[in-house]
Length: 195
Image (cartoon, rainbow, N blue to C red; front, side):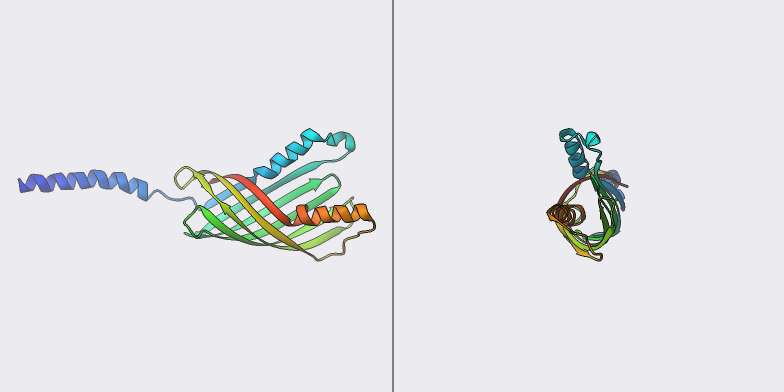
């Protein structure tokens, strides 16, 4: 009787041990690539409202980010931005540090970066950018797979160049550029894959 009980316990532990071991030890992806879908949707919305080709302009907002998980609750990332609104063009690169205080869902993000901006094909203005944001990562899959990542934050641009502001229109475009294309409050909804 005792041998049958021990044999049953061993068999059950082997069966349930392997079942639960597969769930627990499945590897979590350390690499994530995302694209900001909110910026792309904004570009499409402007395209649908304004006939930009007859006006001789071009509108495209996009950003691409690569993130590497260095520890269970920390990651580093590089983000590249391209934003063009008619004759205003902004290019940027950012380095991010993320902290996940509650596992791998909610995150705090700090960043430092460089952006440049040209208006009306004139001189390039250069900016140092510093910012922070908070966000929430939704996983579709166990450890690997698709992700949805809404976030909100603020980026402060510090001018390294000398912007040319001669009249009200130039001042308005400079304000739009500094507070949207280069810095200011920003919201994003990123779609990506974790592998």
